[in-house]
Image (cartoon, rainbow, N blue to C red):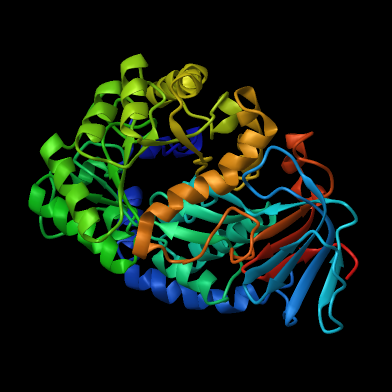
Length: 480
């Protein structure tokens, strides 16, 4: 879901749209230079920024780190196991020990003092380069500014305890590389690349001056790699393969309308069933899967009939659709939007669509629980650095329908199960979302018990005593 505020209404093309204003057209042309090659070179600009004192840096690690006196939430259970030791060697969990064996002299010991220890959190619907970058900054067409803002947000995301995200649309490949190589701190990223849509579908953010389409020139949103518009089977196939060859771990297809994208009502459907089948076949040829953006029941049902593995959103689904999802074992990646506080302010038709989605959230989750649909949690926050801290709040919204243990399982081991469907396209081979021997060492130590009070996660600076990703410490307020 793409949401832009009243400040940026020129992007939504109201009746009084000023998109043909020469100044806006000039700004649009500047962004044409913001190519994928520009994004890659922009990553190099971050090397200096990454050294800034305000950014969390993984510290140099000893041969092994032992977490002692921990109360363990392993990602799968309903309760904590007390007096547990977790040994980390390199970037893996080497052992989970309940015998309280003494540490070796060369190990670094972190005394948890009975605190809760759990796996890092996973957000299954995030937009790394769009979450905290205001629309005017995107309009500037300056990779350095955009990457600097995204770098700061990636650091904040990690320090909220989110050690992994599934990116559901954006030119994130070079940015992911910068994180993976240690240039900047941030979460692991499972990238989709560009959102693939038809003309008029969600993610078609073209200005009126871009219509009719000039076959020799890409639109602004396509130039920056945020979306790919495909109205023929040949173009659809090519755009999917372009994302895969750049390193996409899964493919995102836009199956219908969205909240604030121009001229895309929620009830519309984009690709035909045969087109969606072709998309699914290409993803399967690459041994990964397709997830489909869809709200309306008939849009969701078409995606299911075509063989989609996962549906994004589906807030407007009905009883029949929910039953079909459960019967077919389809994953649902849905966001617990409850009020306008969970989104950048909107006006006009976009606000009406937003309120329709928010009003249907409780009913959608009731259907999820009734039918036992496999469900992932994500936040889907966009275009506001002031809004992104609500990523943690969006997780606590799950308390409306789930126990605290169920919510934490969903945001750890449950979401990790969805990520693992990328198969050999998984950029991080190894188990995520669990605390067990052999799993990747993404670890949080909490001041308090989230099983008793999930809202503790809303204050990560205060309540996350230790944050480790890939065996590296990004925060440690405990004695070592």
